[in-house]
Amino acid sequence: MTRWLLVLILVAYALLAVGYSLGTPPWEAPDEPSHYLYAEHIAAHGFLPSEVPPQQGNYWENGYVTSLYEWFQPPLYYALVAPQISLMNLVRPGTIPQAFPPVNPVFPDQGRNLFELPHERAFSAPGLRLARFFSVVLGLCTLLVVYRMAMLTLAGDRAVALASTGLMAFIPQFTFLSGYMSSDNLALLLSAMCLLAYLHLLRSAGGWDLRRVAEAGALLALTLYVKLSLLFLLPLGLLCLSYRLVNHRSIRQSLLESAVLVGVAIVPFLLGLLILPGMREQVAYAYTYLQVKPEFVSLKYLVGLWPQTYTSFWGTFGWMNVSTPRWIANSLTVITAVGLGGSLVLLARDRLGSGLPSPRHLLLVFWATCGLVAIGFIRLNLSMRQPQGRYLFTALPALVILVATGYRRVSGRLFPLVGTVMVLFAFAANLLCLFGSLLPAYAVSH
Image (cartoon, rainbow, N blue to C red; front, side):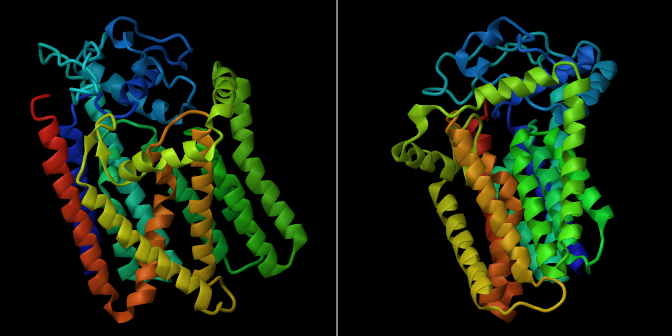
């Protein structure tokens, strides 16, 4: 029964994500044109792009777009998408776009679309469509990892695992993100896999386990080739290893495991700086670009980030200009708050188990994940104003498991019913966002 319920959740997610993908016109999603240009450059030339924009003309008429050129990002995601673009160009030669539509002069005040609609349908960008479906697959894999993480946290509690997976699958903004081309999708998958590896380390029976440490380090190395913002996973891993020191009381073991984790994670990145042409320039630019701006260091500025971050965490589509009903965000917030409250009760009142770590220890790791991601979000916004909820999504797997575990603690034997109602509500809200907000907004855009 559990397997079929999981399949039902995954199928429903996939259908929704494909719906968002097909319903959103090409390029009408945050940073999607810039992500595409990066992958297209690798597909066409076989090496990393430079700071000089690869295309000129109408696409670059408006500074709103040029500010989003992604050339300085690590290359792993784009290296995976580039063969897909090349494949589509082999199947249908000439389909790589040579120019983008002009920027819509009335955006965002009077128009949903950032770009003016082309007069002909020839500009279909099938490579982009394939890359979007790749995002759907990445989201599907992320949900499977979340299910496994929840099963591991509560020693096989299938109800919690299904509730965690279903809640994440049907958060409207996550489903929308999974339907367009963005490196955030691979970042979310790899960060979830890295967190799962840490949980396995904590569940380890003790003694030397350098193989698992090395595997976690290898996953961390991959994350650093997707987004440098995922560097928070390194201190999180060291935190997990410090628990092993407390549990096994071996300083030598802890130092060796920490050295293996850091070495396996960092050395590949350092080798990339030495070997890959252009990667040093990417990192240098990112370091300069992300310097703290004094005018952003104020409580008023940070508080001003909240409204847009709040709404876009649950569901704001297009170029952050297609709104969804506010009551959906408020309802999901209440559901989340109650679950998080229950998880805090679990932390405060439940006794620790003996031997292997109890769920309490693992929940502390999830709370630490949420805290580190929040700190990274604030740090990013001290460099550039980006109050977008998707920048918090690397904490989403931890968040939904905390929420489901909290409801398990509060509702007890009624949890299967409570979890089902919670997931069905999120699914209904997602349907309403898709058919009531996104599709009507772009009804004349295809």
